[in-house]
Picture 1 (tube, one colour):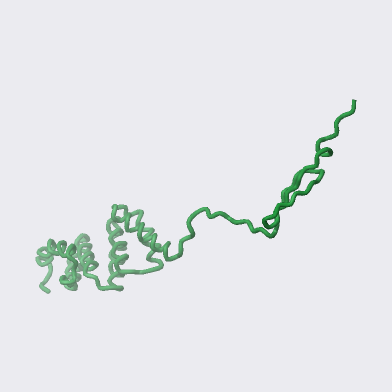
Picture 2: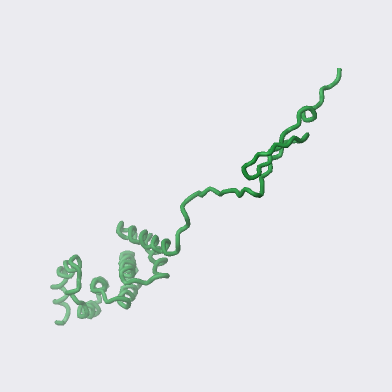
Length: 177
């Protein structure tokens, strides 16, 4: 009895070639081959949001740093503040960065950052922070010098309450303005 021929010699396989919206079917005796037409570009699916702009990344550092500072997580906030401050120096950001340094016990660095903030903008809140820092360090001379420079009338209401609680103590240790 004769052996039947292999299937590929009996039934030719089909090859599908795609060309701009037309499908052409060819028969060949070998295996099927699918080829892409060079006329049809392959679209890539978007896998996520578009990349952030440098300004958006910078803003993200600050937003995360502020959120961490408000939760009392200054150790985690400090590197984010540093990334922000490498690009943009702002008095308010320097004040908050300095406050975190202070809370982490890095008093000399905190004082330097507070002074740098004052270099950019005379802010009575920053000056009040310098007074408090000097008092914590036991440096009454420095506290009195900063107190003499403080413009109390420019303090915001929340800072004014803090000042009011310190006023008698400062008046008792400092010479009159």
